[in-house]
Length: 82
Image (cartoon, rainbow, N blue to C red):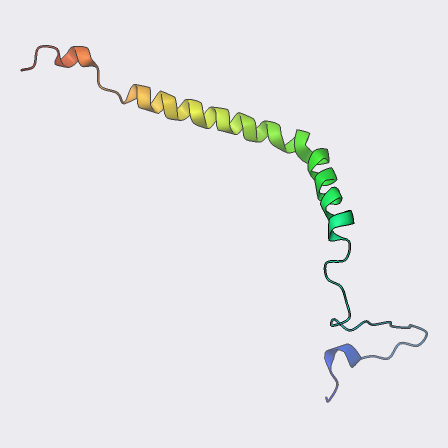
């Protein structure tokens, strides 16, 4: 066919502006906008995410302790062994 993917159709009235990837600043606004935005998003979702994780950890911790307690040997069973 001879045409590349970006040139398969011609559309009139549409203007494309492109900037070379070598001219772009990839870290523009990272410190001034990116980090505060991440902090805001974490704060907004913390009340939805944290309680299930805390509850899951408490159940996991309880289950491990209960498993260790159940599988422990009773010292009274071996009191008369020599």
